[in-house]
Image (cartoon, rainbow over all chains, first blue to last red; front, top):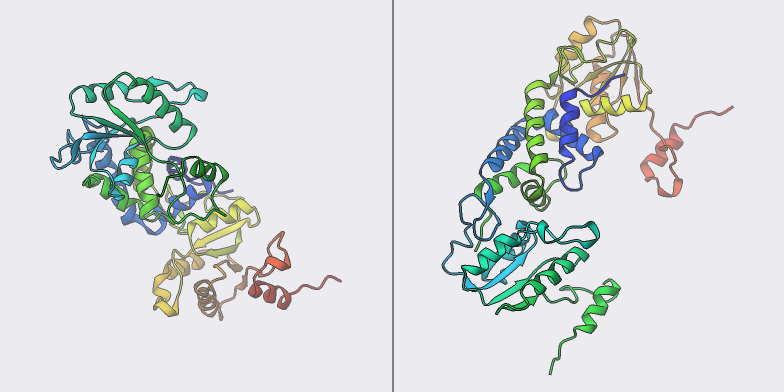
Length: 200
Length: 200
């Protein structure tokens, strides 16, 4: 009976760190890398090494970047009055791709989840408070996810800012662009009715 | 406007070497690795490095292994009379998982595709011939895929062995285990009728 080699087994196991990659996909990936994508595998090795060595957190907004301060925080064109709080660096990338926020960001690098005993210590709240103290922020836009954890985080943050002189807002909820009533889940539909906008 | 960092962009591009990973999945993977899976990313880095350094081809059967000869070829319990020819090392793993072949293997590391101008030079045919010359093989089981390329490879190999004293067979075609007529494609169904077995 043939066993996969130790190095191969280790690689298969290591690949399951990737999102949505189980043992079966990881096996396919490992074989593909070693069978006929050796050059690509070498490049992946070097890219991963470089990223792990150089990518760190922005001193100001906590997102991932290669310098002390990220390109958004360093950009004098951005509006320093509006600070958007997000869960993860990938959310900054999504928001930037939508071209709908020209203020600054703060990345929590975590969420609050009462069910899992994750409280304020699981988000970068000290860094956020320090950030607010040395800034010209007037509006805080809470852009956490619309999940149980995102809602809990938004609530705790709004409590935190309650007595502070900031306008605090949260992203609107409602129908997605192109959404059809027939295919949208009941919760979204109910929220869209509940938060309906006056047209005239 | 924030741009992803250079190291991050390089990692995203490098991750698309993985099967079924496009730019969008690669971005999710890269962020996940750097956001909250740093330990896993370090392990992936080391596992990939070890695999690229140590995994090579078996001198006899051409599969991936860490020694000069793989564990199947080195196993005295395997029947040296039956040699199964497959496309890739992953096929050896699949066949071994099915526990249905106790002979030896040969891995072509390629396929013949007349449409893409890929001929005998795209498979390890010299190594296969050398393997046969110093072996006790009596039956060659061609276990290439049932695709256009696999069929072409099987045909060319059967021509190659035509005047040699081997029994040459190919995997059976037919209904998959648990297959229902309603859901099986027409080609498979036709093949299952064409190669129907006598029951009594």
